[in-house]
Structures are given as structure tokens and as C-alpha cells.
Image: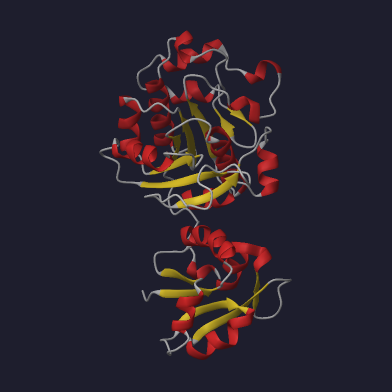
Length: 340
């Protein structure tokens, strides 16, 4: 199939950085997004004619000049205010562009089989918003119509602070530990304990797992057993920060890893060391970054260079956020789209 090309020309670098990663993850294998956000490069680009492309989107102030040298099947002015005829509004961010180009350029999000997609949420260090990210991704996937199960595969499970469960329902019953006694977890026994909310989830134990003679390998076995049963389209697993041998082996066989980072000093190096230890990993790793508040960044204006693509950047929250609030604010929507 012939490659489709989308050219975005905007000297508003803040805008282009905001939309580039999100759009790139949603384009299908035949579509390509190119961006010109440098005045110097634009000046050179406008000096010569170029082959016809599929879609041109350009700042309103330079739209006529761009159209003169760059023929396209479709063209749109990029405007600051409300959307007008043959225009894309900056206020609509990536959604404005996606609406303009149409579904022919996008991945097919309809599932052609019943294979369960396991999404591993990890971090190379603490304080990166990993629990919030895993909950947010699960909530967004469920909101998109998917059958979703969330599993907290950590020694100490604290995801309950994000869910509006009260009283005895907040913690797993002691009898749930019996479901882990079989080296290959009994899916039917586990199903009796799975709880429902914005998405399905395995309830947390009140005490650390060792108090119940449960190891994390039991959670990996459980995830594999439930995935094999294909009752869920997505299983989102949150893992602890410590990279153990068992976790490295489990992640090495996986297809999707979402790495959370706070973008602090040494973050890129820690991520690379973490991933380099997953010798057998052949899947896709993407980053989910916590955005520093203004004036807090350790790096100032110097960007961090990562080996892996960033699927979304979210501002750090100082207060708890429920799945419903995340959905209302659109948090982790891009991350969910990237892992679908």
C-alpha cells in the first residue's frame, strides 16, 4: 500500500511538541507525520517545489506560501481560535488533527481476535506516578469499551487510595490467598475474588504479600492464566520498582511495557539499565513522563534524551485522583491509545 504523508508546518514549537508524540502512536503503518517547526528550515523549504503529499497543515500566517510550493490532496490552515472551514484549531490539539485527516490514516482499533493484551507498567525509580498511571490507563481502556483487568503485582499494594471502595471491600479476603497455592493459579478460584468498578481489579491484601506466604511469581502466573482464558481484552499489571530475576523473565516475554519516569537527574540512564537487563524483550517500550511544575525541573531548559518514545506527559499531582476524575480531565488518554 502506498505511503500516506502528513506535513505539519508550525513555528509554535510548544504546540508541535504537544501533538507529535500522540499522533505518531495513532497512525497506521502506512502513514507518516513530518513536522517543520524551524524558521531556518522553513525558509529553505519554501525556496523549491516539492512532490505532492496527502495532507498539509500549516500556520495561518504561512499557509499561502506553503501551499504554493507544497501541493496536497487536502490542506488545512492551523488557527488560534475556533475551528473554521478548511482549518484545524490549535485548541483541539492532537484531536483536531486526527479529526481532519480521518480514519484512513489511523490504526484499526477494532480487535480482530480475542487475544488478551498484557500491558506492564513499570518504573526504574520511585515517585514517578506509576500507580496513578496504571489506574489511569486501565480506566481509559475501559472507557473505550475494552474488558479490562488491573493487577497490582507489588509486595505492598496501595492502589486502593485511588478507588472509591470502603469498609471490608477495600481489602482482599484471607481466603483469596488459597487461590495462589497452585503454582499455576486457578483462574476459576481467582474469578471469585475479582472486584468490579470502573474496571475489574484483583483486590489488594492489607499486609505485605509475604504475610500470606505469597510470592510475586504467583501474580505473574495468575496474569498468564487469566490471559490464556481470554476473558479480558486488556490486563494492566503494575510492577514494583525492584527488578528481580523473576520479574526480568516475565517482562522479557512481554509485548508492551509502559515505563514511568519523573524526568529527574539520571532518569534516562536508569531506564536504559533497567531495559538492558531484559535480554529477551522484543516488544515495545514507551515512556510516560511526570511533568515538573514550573521552576521545579532539575534540568531547566535542557531536554532529556531518551532511547524510547514518549507516549504522554502528565503533570504531577499532589492530591489523590479517582479514575472518574482522570477520565474527565483526559489524563492517560494518549497512553491508552498508544498501547491499544
